[in-house]
Image 1 (cartoon, helix red, strand yellow):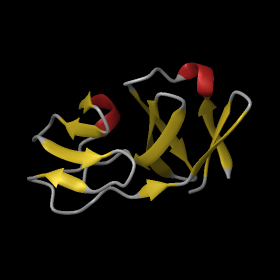
Image 2 (cartoon, rainbow, N blue to C red):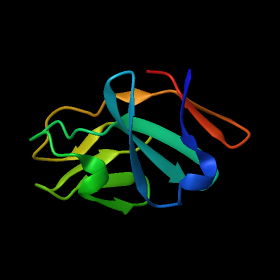
Image 3 (cartoon, rainbow, N blue to C red):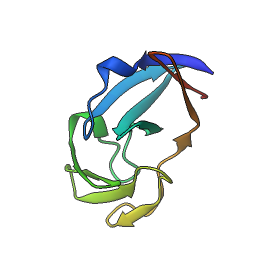
Length: 100
């Protein structure tokens, strides 16, 4: 696992985009947990961390309206037909670690 961000940099209900091992990753802070998915929408490759709306445990890519479950990556509302890749996360102190 590699350090992706500081927990203190993440705000509940927001998405932070990071690059780790050449991959674009979106970090989501939901309460006291952090989740990570690909930051690239599977529909038209928009960058989610720059075009999003959070509703509970779902993120909407506002480029074309696709919705994804933040915890599982499952696509829940079209037009995206493929899920987002998810990454295991771990919090150590103020460090958010991601396995990519």
